[in-house]
Length: 217
Length: 239
Image (cartoon, rainbow over all chains, first blue to last red; front, side, top):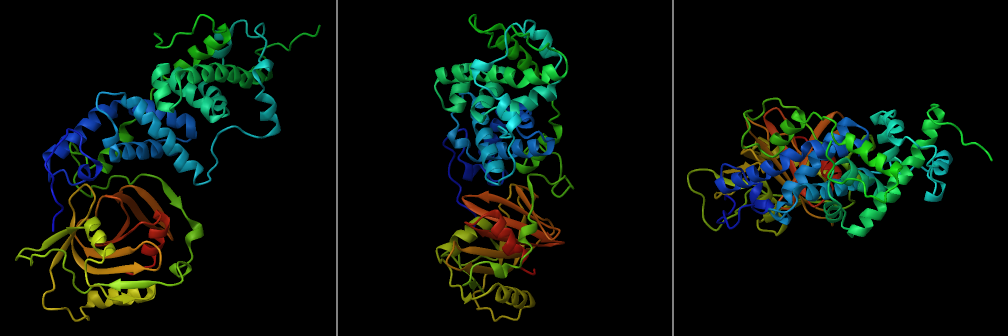
């Protein structure tokens, strides 16, 4: 008994049909081609985000692979013509939670070590603007690994906003869709996240002598 | 560098600098060719040039479950294993050519009791019956069907059915299929290692399955259980 073949009714088939051998149904093959045509160009973005999240190239590839597999399996939930990047980023975020938190692996979120707690200060304790009088030059001195390490120390919701908006250059509206929060929430989180990132980087800059200790007075 | 999200006018200059610095991370080049190859294999690349079993690197996450070294005896206390000597999966008698059944469909039939399948009570008994089936020591009804099972993986791989067992222990039904084929289904999905053996898991039509091969024989363990549980069961079967 060979599985029943249903007549194609839409360009992108449901997952059960898509996963049949492509030899059986050329329309299903076309569905796969469509998915690949839209999703493959997004692999670099997904992988960049995954590397930052996992800090491990192998895990990052695994994460993206699982994301793409889930995307393919649930392609029926994607509306053609909408933002596939936002859609896949949503899947990536949820897959990351499933794969790593469920397995109780150490997820690089906020560290609860005392030093880290001290570093993650409320916005009121943000570094003095005077100390960051030349912020672009100061930030240029940090290598990417240091920036990414600081990102991993942010709370998950804050990190994701920066990942999508500042790093992957998604619009605030697109990020709101992907994160399933209002646009205003994205904006406020982004603002707080950038401030917190400066708070995390500030002591590093001071340790390296890039900033002078604030003068008393 | 053009930013889709230029800093807002009221944004502190320091935060705007953060935005600009982070944007540079988004322009880092990443190597995706290996990932693309893995995905092409996993998705049954319709454009792929590689033949089946070309030795592509297996992929997906690996769980080194050292804690799963205990034998399957640690699983459910009451195990009823149903073994089929023959099964009918269609009201129509088979034709001269071997009827082909997809593994996931086979499991669904087992779940709903679509075949008259006798039961055994332990995984040890499963191994005994599988051995008997393979040795031909079990009387087969006259209307036994010559069945070829089709791997549910994206590449059409078929095999001659060697044995079929079903586990019912109060938890979701699990089917065991042993087949023989020159080609093993593509390695794909979740990879679980137990005692140095690799088991490959994926899900199709809502049926989760773990597969492993030994030369030209392969086993598929299917059911609504975790990959780890299915792999543990598969590891306990001698095929």
